[in-house]
Length: 589
Image (cartoon, rainbow, N blue to C red; front, side, top):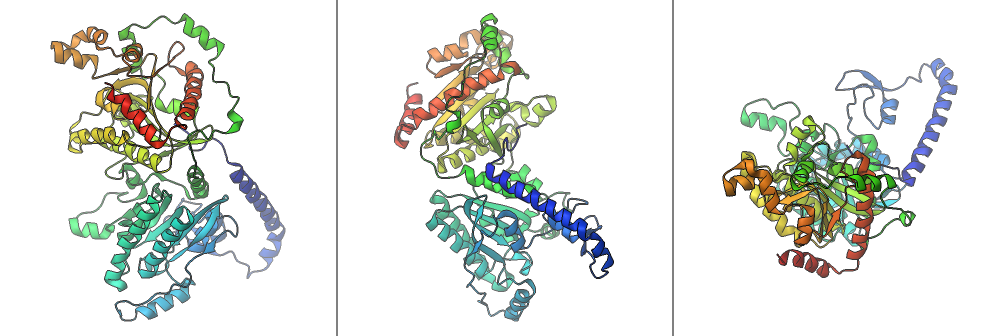
């Protein structure tokens, strides 16, 4: 599968070099001082007991491992100041709203005393530290909830700091990153605490409507009113491994339903599977991942901001491929049907991995689940950020079964639409790769609204105000393919097919004889050349003798060079012209 990052950014490389140098100096110093330390009995290393494996571990080593147990990989909870230090550039953090103090809106007995004791014990004024920082030079607002302060519960001050941070970030045109860790609402503040859910959500909405990025990072635990407000409203939602994430706590659920919950219920992995988070990120990778996300969302104009280093790249096929293409026998219609269905045929992920840099896969429809039949995320086309979406059938029998043989569910189409709407918000072009026999015709798909999901994509794609390029790379089966193919241009591979339904289905419906599929294929006009004549597709992509591994570089180069030309052309259009071009493209039929 695709690598998350293909190449390192120079800022990341510089910091890693500094870190390695510092570690080398520290190791040398530790070696020199080892004898003296052993002689001094008072100089005993501080230890802690891991709550998961029960082993006694050195606190200093756990700290070096970013507060992860080096024996069992257990994630310790991280204090706000340490979390800020882990993800911020050195001395870059500037705290905001430090003057806000906790009141007692309900005159709750002994609340002030509890607050004072917690402040003295933790050194915190309240449950969140928030301010402005830099991550590998990228400026952002950063907030961290500290669970030591009354379980990270959200009272008025926490809600006020988060709301004010969104407001100030909107004024200063800054992204927002919030590390969430909370037991939910602050009971001692009652209804005032409840109101923070609406207040923070409204502030996040205004920040979003200003076209700005918000990334929540869900850590253990994120529950209650925090989960049911700002924590789940991000453009991209990250989570740490095994983090407990949910609205109601596990004990409350078990008491309500009268049974034990299954292993892993409400954990980050459960949330990923059910479509509620984009990715689970190991703690050691968090800073790099946040930087990659911030960099991909830098404000841009136009759609052809290509790296000048690639201006002289050659996208012509190799001589060997030209020779192979010349020797290839012409495919008959049924040969093309068979070729399009081959499991060994180049897949969406092959083209994504070859054409784009730094593909970062995002998951989930935010409603029910993540559909593996559709792969989507953010990548770079020679420096230009793009949103890439592809139907993936699988590369072997196990993978095919996992991905439902490339037949998307309603959740898959909704995931694709979510990513497309996100692309529109951040002015990113959209490129789709389509290879499906059709939308999944199962019972569950109907229960979850397959027809509505397809219709919604057609409806919304017609009005998305960024360029959309769609590539038919294998089978283009009926409405299931069309739901990802409402583009300004549609290209089709030489031996791909695109049809109202399968030839077998066509023959069964019209002639009551599925065995006449070959005959049906001849009359259906389903090949690239047929559809070019009908003006259904705009360009035919050569396969140089067949879409296999040997042809990947030549096919990929052809696609890449022409994608760049497409984006250069679309960059000259206004938003209204983009929409009119797309509307007229389908209005003519």
